[in-house]
Length: 499
Ligand SMILES: *[C@@H]1O[C@H](CO)[C@@H](O)[C@H](O)[C@H]1NC(C)=O
Ligand SMILES: *[C@@H]1O[C@H](CO)[C@@H](O)[C@H](O)[C@H]1NC(C)=O
Ligand SMILES: *[C@@H]1O[C@H](CO)[C@@H](O)[C@H](O)[C@H]1NC(C)=O
Ligand SMILES: *[C@@H]1O[C@H](CO)[C@@H](O)[C@H](O)[C@H]1NC(C)=O
Ligand SMILES: *[C@@H]1O[C@H](CO)[C@@H](O)[C@H](O)[C@H]1NC(C)=O
Ligand SMILES: *[C@@H]1O[C@H](CO)[C@@H](O)[C@H](O)[C@H]1NC(C)=O
Ligand SMILES: *[C@@H]1O[C@H](CO)[C@@H](O)[C@H](O)[C@H]1NC(C)=O
Ligand SMILES: *[C@@H]1O[C@H](CO)[C@@H](O)[C@H](O)[C@H]1NC(C)=O
Ligand SMILES: *[C@@H]1O[C@H](CO)[C@@H](O)[C@H](O)[C@H]1NC(C)=O
Ligand SMILES: *[C@@H]1O[C@H](CO)[C@@H](O)[C@H](O)[C@H]1NC(C)=O
Image (cartoon, rainbow, N blue to C red; front, side, top):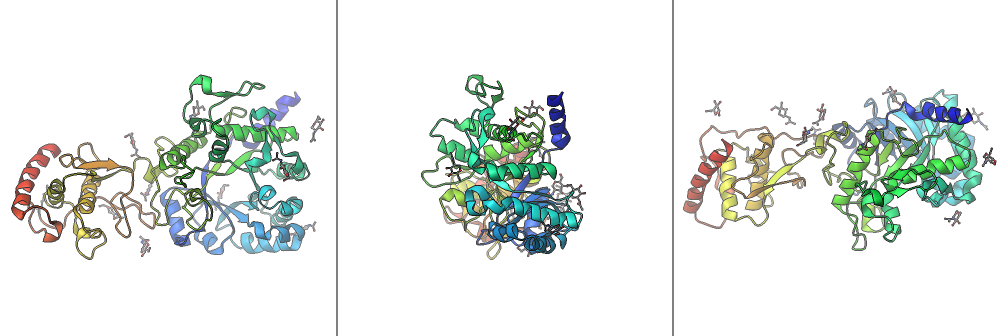
């Protein structure tokens, strides 16, 4: 009976909730987009949940009236002050929370970041800080809509495999026990940062890469918890379950988990060879599908484990190895670092990302063939090639590879990326890497403001074939006569391809 009730309680807390995907917004960029640009990117990507590392006023104002749900943070620097003074906590809440709600939909306050491992000398005041912040919310009647918690590094969990034997580092019992009781009594959740990348890196080959990346494993390679007989197909689930077991070891069984950070770096130093675009894309795409599907974990199937991806932008100013600057989904211009594979995974990041493809000149293609195809695209193909003119955004770099890529892609996008429209007699190829550069935004890409550009504009001129195109489109090799002959052949061949 007691077990049944406990089970019910878990479901009552989170069983009817839909898991969501959010993103962390770090701001250590030399070219940090303005808050308005950040919000435009979030909206174009249909991101409905964000976590900030502070309570930046301009950012909170930009997020007002967007409906985006915001977790704000008390930075570690402020923790000692807030944890030692109820009045300081109340002032912080008045200035950073009360002045923004309800226009800005603040739904949680993360008090500090990985305090036990990053700032252990503040650990003794951590629970007081949460309680003071919470009582200020109670005084303003905001405590039911704004949850208070504190993100932990998963390294506080010891012996995390098998998950059923995991426990929080006992040194922290004096903090974890009152903390969990606070989370339980206020209906809040455990905030946990989960980085299978680091577990994989530190495992010296014990953890297979596929297991960290949510790739299917042969059944004999699946990790089985001998105590529970639960099968683990990925590291993420194993860590989340290790946290559930660690909590139940302290007799807390009804506090849900929200993963406040998870991700994979797309680039690293020479010693960080698994920080690649492919691995980052695989990890984040699989993570998003796993979370949105409300899969839950082996211990709690179907229980939401909402997760914030680390992170929105690559932060070039973060010190440390190259991975530290390459956790982002986007660069400072709002151009995706890679295109997530999210078909069928709901609407978050839906616009780019599902099928964002571009058509570019094939590497090593014959420049004469490229020139001919470029002329065809800007002529009979009716692509608006005016951005390629001198002084316009896509003139530089002034070479046939770059210009033909622009024209091929514009044609491909306008034709709805239909089969056969990225061929150009074999000199074109499809890529998922956005070829936009500087102020030259390729059709089908996401610009600086996160708005998708159209591939639909037609050449301004009449339907005349290859007339009126200025000599800027021609490049050194081959005489004009040869080019014209090739154009003629090309037009013929292309017409047969496209008809
Ligand atoms: C993104 O997709 C949604 C839903 O399909 C659509 O309403 C919205 O206009 C799209 N935004 C952009 C910038 O394409
Ligand atoms: C804020 O988010 C909550 C979900 O936690 C939602 O119920 C509420 O309608 C949102 N409020 C606004 C003003 O968008
Ligand atoms: C702290 O301040 C709140 C108001 O912000 C008040 O309701 C509460 O009683 C105070 N708690 C203590 C321990 O002083
Ligand atoms: C547990 O935490 C203490 C205090 O931070 C630390 O000194 C110790 O190394 C940790 N134990 C393990 C096994 O990580
Ligand atoms: C958890 O409950 C068990 C059984 O009631 C008890 O023996 C144990 O001391 C409790 N542990 C903690 C940390 O409260
Ligand atoms: C989605 O959830 C179902 C069960 O609810 C599960 O069988 C399936 O494997 C999950 N898919 C992913 C991608 O996690
Ligand atoms: C993405 O591509 C798949 C297969 O090519 C297609 O079924 C799906 O409709 C596309 N999704 C979007 C949003 O275009
Ligand atoms: C996009 O941002 C640029 C500045 O980066 C600005 O000049 C332009 O007006 C913005 N466009 C839209 C549609 O917001
Ligand atoms: C895209 O094209 C449509 C129809 O041609 C037009 O109405 C719309 O304004 C264009 N959007 C942009 C961002 O150029
Ligand atoms: C160009 O061709 C289209 C059909 O391909 C036709 O509808 C249009 O009227 C033509 N325009 C001119 C200026 O001839």
